[in-house]
Image (cartoon, rainbow, N blue to C red; front, side, top):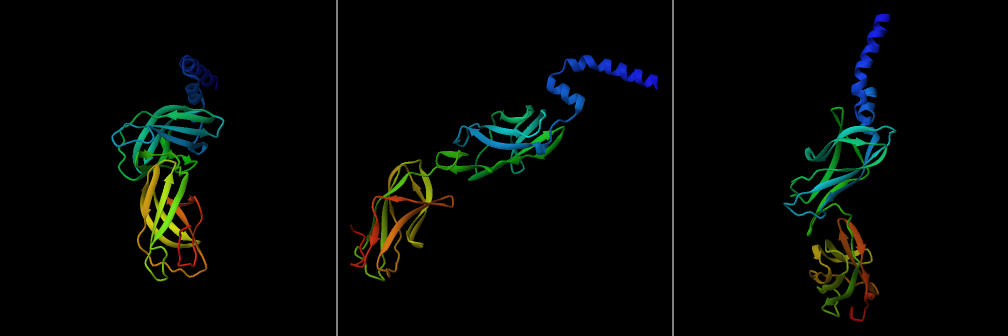
Length: 260
């Protein structure tokens, strides 16, 4: 028994110099083993630079990794597009709380309309997915691919008219709208509504910054009530936005006219 204790003591003395020369994080790991688990981690934020990025540009990613445990640890982190690794950073220290992690630049090629990324973490050669605070997707725009939140407007309807005006019930009519976009250029579906009823619609319309004049297809809209007040709805990525108008655009039964 004494011989075993002496051997263990001598072995510890032999390892002590090498442990003392280690970095504090590695010393802790070598004494106690893995200190964090994949379930302790969550990705709060994922960004890329430049944003937006154009085809052929090199891109780098930054992530904010939240460690909910009280321990630190060294991990490798992988950003993935489906099964393909987009970027990786190796042997990075993750401490308790929020950690900003920078990934090296990569020549990853953006070709599709949308990319939604997942994140894996490798701890002690065991790779596991990390929970995401939200879905991190890059979408294609006219400026390139971006991960920024979509900002719409301000948008204003400066004028809305129809032809012929006045219109006769049962007659084919055509609407024309002049819209001013004071925000970033967008691509959207634009529709004219009479309360909850769609009068006419244009799909996949590009609205640059400034004024745009939209000519809608002919429609045989049924004028039936005492008055019909129209609004313009801009639908961006399945999110509808009601556009402010310079005035109320209503057609009343005096020959059904939109003229003031």
